Image (cartoon, rainbow, N blue to C red):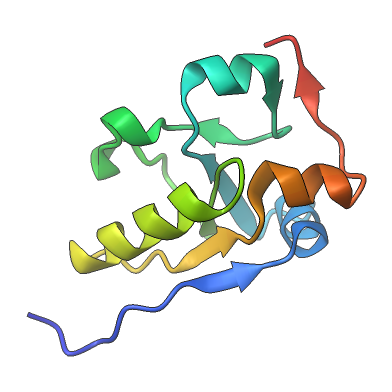
Length: 111
């Protein structure tokens, strides 16, 4: 067992959007498919929390992984759980889709 402590780094929506655009971050949306069908993060990979498997995470290609959800609750939970399983993914979008939209960032609608 690692003695590395589990922490979750909160990232602001504008910081995440800029990081995705610059190719520094890979955004993983852990919301369920019915939620994503209504509104989605542009350029996010969808891996629903209900069926989440770390093996499904795509090749990061040098990017850092950032989890996202609707409010930040599920993305923080998965970050904790995946670190407990030995993975180094400690970043999430604080405030989730709610904060993303409040920051005026683009949203894909209609699936």
